[in-house]
Amino acid sequence: MTFPITSIAKLLIQLATITPTVNESIDKTRKLIDTIRKPGAGTQNQLDDLKKAIELQASVNKEINDKLKLIETVLQTVQKSLKILAVTGAGVGLIALVYRFIEIYLITRTELQTFSNDALLAPR
Image 1 (cartoon, rainbow, N blue to C red):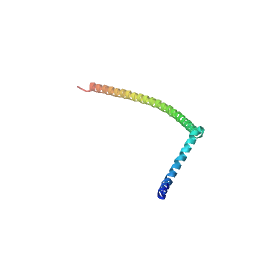
Image 2: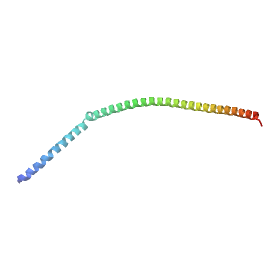
Image 3: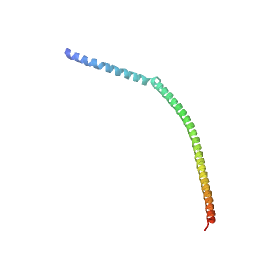
């Protein structure tokens, strides 16, 4: 049985376009199989890299936590100082208010005495 030359040429052209893609996927599959067959090859390196990354992240997290604790301590100190300042300010305001009331009371009392003395001295 003989095949026509044109059919064979068309088949070869189709194979020529498909072959590089097939070869590339076969190479990738072989590399993947090699990686799977050798448990220490790719998997162990990836696990080591992952372990290093986790350790690095843990150290960064610890450093950030230490800094946050320091900031929290400073903020607590500032909060205490602000509370003391607020209480002191309220105390000074209360003292000023009491002083003003005493001053008004004394002025009013003096004016009343002057008024009553003037009223007594004034001719009727």
